[in-house]
Length: 75
Image (cartoon, rainbow, N blue to C red; front, top):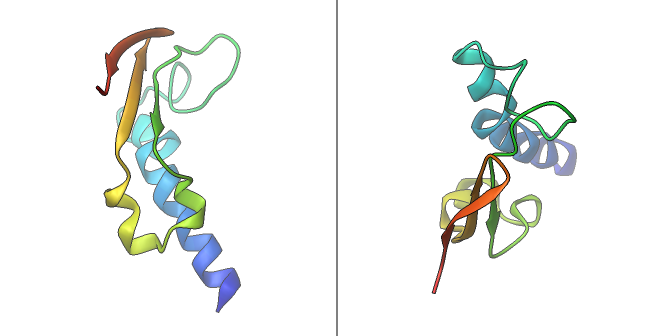
């Protein structure tokens, strides 16, 4: 059971990152943190890999970065 849950967590995060970029045909420029790609990412209030996978949407965004610059910061 544990391996299934861990795999599900990884799939959920990939759905929001690299797989989303692939669907938009942007996987060469975004969707993962690699040199040469745009630095668009968020910082959340907890580790999504430690959550029950169906509760990943309960994470609160603390900061949002676009092109490596902070564009949102929670109060």
